Amino acid sequence: MLEFIQNNIFLTLIIINYVIAIGTAIFIILNNRNPITTVSYILALVVLPFLGLLIYYFFGQEYRKDKMFKRKKVFYNETVKKWEKKLMLNDYRLENYQSDFLHNKVNVVKLLQNNQKKPLIFGNDVKILINGEKKFESLFKDLEEAKNHIHVEYYMFNDDKIGSKFIEALIKRAKDGIDVRVNYDYVASGITNKSIKRMKEAGIEIFPFMPVWFPNLTRKLNYRNHRKIVVIDGIIGYVGGVNVSDEYVNPNDTGYWRDTHSRLKGNVVKSIQSHFLLNWNFVSEQEIEITDDFFPKVEEKCGDIPVQIAASGPDSDYPHIMEAIFTAINGAEDYIRITTPYFIPNDQMLTALKTASRRGVDIEILIPKEGDSWAAKYATNSYIQELLESGIKVYHYCKGMVHAKTMVVDGLLSTIGTSNMDYRSFEINFEITAIFYDEGISKKMKEIFEEDVEHCDKVDIEDWEDRAFWEKVKESFSRLWAPLL
Image 1 (cartoon, one colour):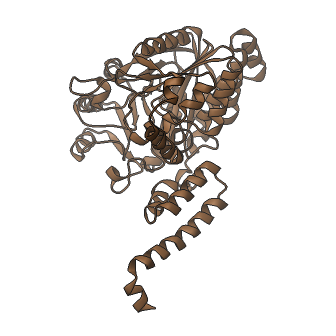
Image 2 (cartoon, rainbow, N blue to C red):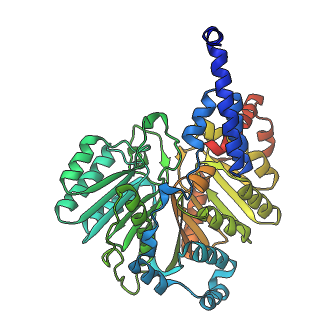
Image 3 (cartoon, rainbow, N blue to C red):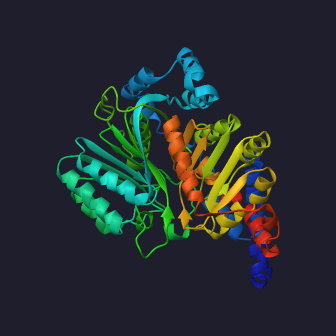
């Protein structure tokens, strides 16, 4: 036997690989996961010896609701429960709002209020910020005026030009006596040890989210913190698609990046704060003392806009953001406008969009023409044919990379957040989205969409059908791995 193994090393390794692969496949099947995801991983195990096992090891293991994400004590804190109870709407008030201005959008409100205990919060001010230039201009001004604390949570935090300017602003405020806490994703960020040391020496608490070995080789490693949020004094919050990296502020030496962020002021920021604190407990391995300073009393009338926060991740019981978008699509009566850099929907979302279109809802989807990922581009393109056949209009953004994650429904409901329209955002990563129930905001968001369309090519169904055969092959191949992208 030993001699056979020595003379047939490769064959022996192949046998060992498939013995392990069969056991892994059985384990995946018994987990009763999404059938498409299950088939994708089994396919990888079968057709990619050795590599398939590595793919599953790095990307496929399911830790949802596992011991890694137990820290839910933030939501049981008396301070958090007190403000949530104060702002939570009862069924009677919801029914009144339904007849007044929410109409069937009240179903989205009820979904998040019942499942995630996130109320619809009135009296907020909202500013829509186009691209990183506007976002950072506003943010630096708010940082300078902070009085108690600054909480920062980013997927991509680089110490390039804009990142260094951001770090200097945080260091200055920390030296002024402001409490500064920073949580950055270890895999996506490019912040150096030197910068981290400088921040710590200034009194900033900074922790990486789930460090891993060889981050450059595992850029899509599961369970990343994809959120981009800042909370200032528990009163001002930022949510959207803009990371801390130079490309987002469009310097002359990089391609154009089109993104959308939002600045929120009012009680809704407390919802963002609670999610920051939950992740902070996880990354810092602390049980931070939650005080009224984190959830301060807000002046009675910051603005007029009702806002609700949807957040999801491996620590949540349900994919809240996906369910909220799904519910909004199913309730649409007039139109839907979606902008997303990656359109790789699950079956539920794809069916909801196609059936909404076929019952008369005017749906337009804007995606990048090139994108920043070869596999994601072709996986996205694999869905275009069936969208067009269902009457959905698809636009390819040609000016550069569109990275905004937004939706407008019926001139009443609109969203700005971190979640892409794909498997990874819906099921795996930590994401957060602000949902606005306001005609003025929706009108502005629709106008922004129409301005972006001016820089797009509309996809024609006949031209699309005539695209090259090898393009279709690449699309079909990429779609097989859609749950892994």
